[in-house]
Amino acid sequence: MDELWNEILEIGQRILNGGNITRKEAEALGKSKESDIFLLCSFANKIREKFNGSDVDLCSVINAKSGSCPEDCAFCAQSAHHHTNAKCYPLIDEDKIVETAIKREKTGARHCDICTSGLGYTGKEKNFKIILNAFRRMKANTNLKLCACLGTLTMDAAQQLADAGVERYNHNLETARSFFPKIVSTHGYGERIDTIRYAKKAGMEVCSGMIIGLGETMEQRIEHAFLLKELNVDAVPLNVLNPVKGTRLENARPLPPLEIIKTFAIMRFIFPDKNLRFAGGREKNLKSLQPLGFIAGINGMLIGDYLTTSGQEVNKDFQMLNDLNLTY
Image 1 (cartoon, helix red, strand yellow):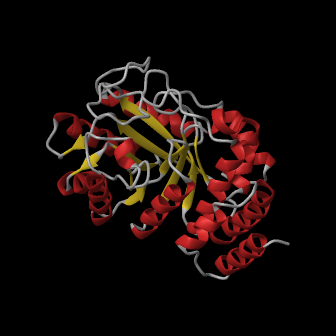
Image 2 (cartoon, one colour):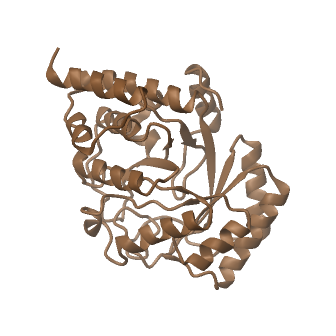
C-alpha cells in the first residue's frame, strides 16, 4: 500500500469525522493515479451520503436572452466576439418565461433559473423590471425554488431580486483567479466576487462553480475551489468544457473521463456538505461514465437543455438516478 493510498484513507476518515482537508492535501490528491481514483470515489460517496443523504437536487434553466454578449469569455458561444451557430434573440416575452417555468416544474425540476446573456444589471434597466415581474408570477404560480443567472449585479439589483422571491443567485467565477486573464479580458475577477457578496448580503443563496477543461491545471481547479469555500457558496456547479466551433477554445483537448471523475471526488472532499451539481458537458465528456459522477460525490443535476447546447432526455436522467438508488 503506497503513501498516497494511506493519505486518502486518513483524509477521508478525517472528513467523515467532521474535519477538513487542506489545500496542500487536496493538491496531493490531485496527483493520484488512475488506480487510486476508485478509492477517492468510495470516500467521496461516503462523505456525500453522510452530509447530504441520497437526495439529488434537480434544476432547469431558461435561456431568456441569448447571444450578442459584449464580453469575450473564450469558451462562450454567446459572445459577440465569436462566430457560432448559437441563437441570438432579445429578452423573451414575460408570459413565455412563466409558461416555460411551469412546464419545467412538471418535468421534475425543483429549481428554475432565468438566465440572460450580457455582463449584468444595475437594477434600473427595463429588461430587469420585466425579469422581476416574471419571478413574482413564477412565485405565485409554481412551487419552484427561484434562481437567477443575470451576470454581475449592483447591491441594489441583488436586493430587488431577493425582494421579488429569488432564493438563489447563480454566478460562476468560471476558473481560478490565476488563470482567469487567459479566458476573459473584458471584465475583472473582482466584479464577479463583488456580485457573490452582494447576493449573500441580500439574503440569497449563491450557486458558483467552475468550468474544467479550459486549459487550467489541477492545482488551479483546487485554487478556485478554496476561494469558493472561503466565499461560503451554497452550491457548486461543475461544468466540463463542451468546445463550440467558432469560439477561441473550439480546439481544446477533451479531458480524460477519469480525470473528470477524480476532480469531482476531490471537490467533494473540499465541500463535504455543499450541493455539488452536474452541469454542462457531462453527456459529451463522460458518456457511459456519467453514473460515476454520483459515486464521486455529485448530489445535484441540471436536467433538460443547457443555454446553447442540448442535454440528454430527462427520462434517461431519471433512469440513471433510479439505477443508483438515489432519490429526487
